[in-house]
Amino acid sequence: MKVLIASDIHGSAYWAEHLVRAVEREQPDRIVLLGDLLYHGPRNDLPRDYAPKRVIPILNRMAEEGALIAVRGNCDAEVDQMVLDFPCMADYAELVDEEGRTLFLTHGHVYGAGFHNSVENLPALPAGSAILYGHTHVKVSEPVPDQPTVWAFNPGSVSIPKDGSNSYGIYESGRPVAEAFRHAVLEEA
Image (cartoon, rainbow, N blue to C red; front, side):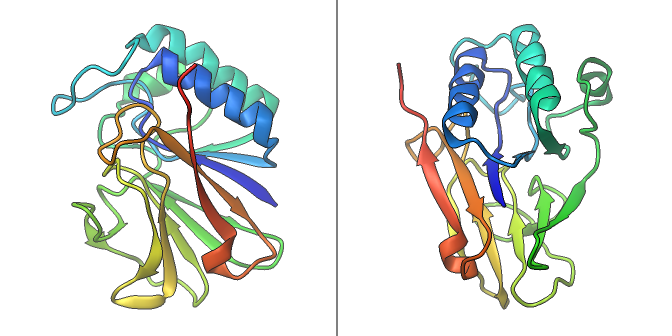
């Protein structure tokens, strides 16, 4: 199973369109959106080409074309669910791959592994699981310090990176957890 993981689009039509091209290129079996989809939030500068009304149909088309799972970010609100055609208000979701590995999907403000200002509130997960989160806009791929049998993966931010590069992530099952995840940079056109 190949999963494309993205977070923190924050209403940027420019970067949402780049993400669509990444989906076309990567051909994932599933798409995971880890929150903060439409609104930029009061602590962030406006992202490039901030246009939430243009992002809505982009995300809805992604949901139509494939299996999409989304969770709620701290900047997402009930009004977002009114315009998006897929569920996006859960604080977490779980995806279990064909080998039985649990991927715990969350934004990072309610549940998190404690990296870069994400909360340190990790539910009990089986050994070999992974927590996938966004929120901090900083890429991570390493074991959780207090639970080294659980892998932490943050794809970084699609539109407002705090580590220098707009990015998404890829998970490919059938590999050891440390090799199953990779980061990919969204290049400017």
